[in-house]
Image (cartoon, rainbow, N blue to C red; front, side, top):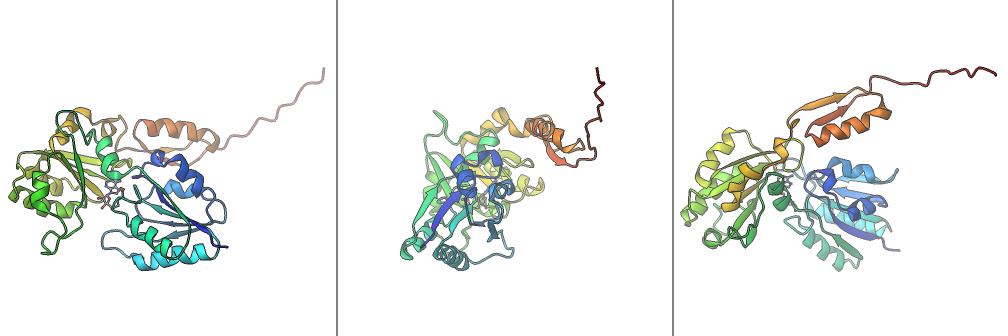
Length: 297
Ligand code: SAH
């Protein structure tokens, strides 16, 4: 019997943004093949004994080639297993999920797609940037910034993007920002248009920065903004200073060690996380019931 493959989006990083369907499917997977940019907590829903395979790839680092990943998915399914292919954000947004679906179709393996919250919407939202806004942006374009703009055969039409009447959302690291900003400005996008970059969006260590398109490229490098990052270009980026909420929580950027006994720690940890803290649970206290002697009456 052939197994079944679920191409599942894990959301952008905050485990609270995993969908109910993702949690349910991870919970009955025989194998989870996961990428680097998934919330670690997602794997905690896998059943005891499930095989967890890291096929992650991160800019430049060691990676399982796509071909090998696809072969693994097919092999596990052919062995009759329930396979969850867990991808960051949404599986069909720059995640090569479409290619994996084609491969499964060719191999006659049944599959389902479970959309996820994409980082191109979630990271701006956590930075206080609505990607559309009445009167300011009635269209939004999602663009991959990983294409090398220096390549003559680049698939990105810079002139069209510069003219695009709405928000541009780039999925890319900060390294590509200077070249992309230059390309857009050369093609006619106003250099003083608001822009923002959101690094590690929705993770407790999220950092964002807003400036004009021209200024952002220098400021981002100086501010130590890294990857993964989403860049937003358009009037809406200017709303970050007003609507940014996540990085403004009172304990943002702080790590708190909770030493309470395990049984009491999680409620406190949850409260601290609500306030923006990163919490390390290190129970240093153990509570035991007092031996109570009931006096005989
Ligand atoms: N399928 C994913 C995108 C995969 S491409 C999705 O829908 O979100 C990988 C790129 O996504 C990264 O280079 C980065 O630009 C962006 N990205 C993924 N997670 C991110 C996060 N938490 N914060 C900011 N950008 C992120």
